[in-house]
Length: 338
Image (tube, rainbow, N blue to C red; front, side, top):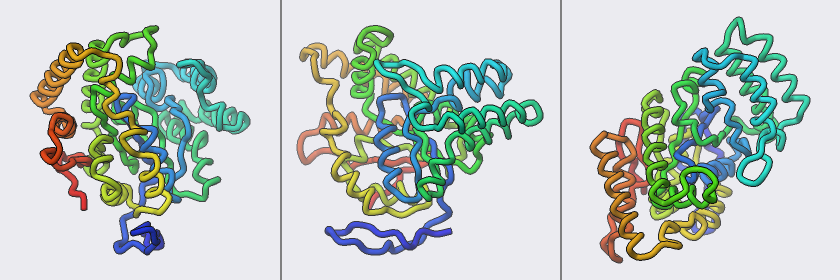
């Protein structure tokens, strides 16, 4: 199946794409450290008519008390269902109620659980896969789309489970400057839970990066793409071409409009880590962050080159910044843009 009927914006006008693409991905999982840009990238992809978006992080397929623990025998079926009907359906977090109750009809929800409970003992993996489809695939049907984008943070970290269930899925690891991602997380916790300080935030971020890297090793290289949000914004909308090729689609005008209007340094809160700290504190955070990147490089963490490139860019004077490096394949090779 190809997408040759797609149209793009070029110089304000629409024109048909010049190359066909491979079969589009039916399942796309977008993950990262948290506060790394997963949601904005998911919204970008949902502007393509091929993809429908799961509008919240559903989490039951990636949390330890969800599919990973259930299929490993650490969580019972009944405990899983209790949490599904509890926090994952409607739970309070960061000041508001979250969960599937916001978009999944309750009759559909209960019907999916009943079918899951009946099928689980005979074939746990098939039951889990079908539960995911029964709960969420209606979004694809209603949108007359062909693929589903889901944005729970831990999708890449828990890829070992998801690859077993969805062998045809593709994964995108969204990366952001660790100084900004950690500062955003500290602001989000409001000192109630860890990380409470900027130093703790960087420690949180490094641990999360390592978890993502470990999980990503379960993904076949041709089904994983790492995207640096910072580098993507510098590269511009030309970087959407290889991103779309990875997913088996071509760029569409609504994607380009969203990118140009909503994906820029202002909306991404770039350099937010500098806010509210003194020059001395900034210097200390810079030192700690570079040490973290050096550790990641020494340990062969796959996304370290993208992090290093963004750090170098933040330090370069005008005209001396390195060329953007927005995309890296699962085998570690840089994806050329333009």
